[in-house]
Length: 114
Image (tube, rainbow, N blue to C red):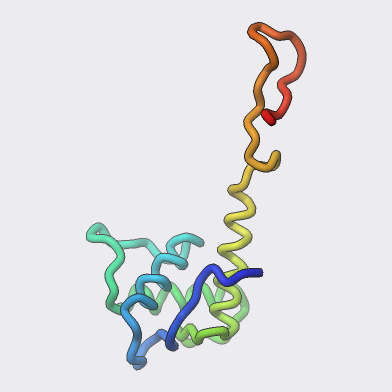
């Protein structure tokens, strides 16, 4: 499975973090329902709500609860798994084809567009 969420450096409390890693972490957690972005939007600064969201995700997925995401570590892998599962659920079952009828007022079942 291709990585959907990547980090340059570890992220969590007491870590010097890359601002883009913070944005990616918050965005990924928001995408799987573990982080509620504030009204002003996602910021590049690590904060308590982000660390709490990481810990809640870890707890909910049977991982070590420490609020830290390491590049290539179990929390990052589990977030990627959750993101991939969510994307699969959103994909149309017919490969994205829209159902159409052939001819105006054509009787019978709709057929996939080609």
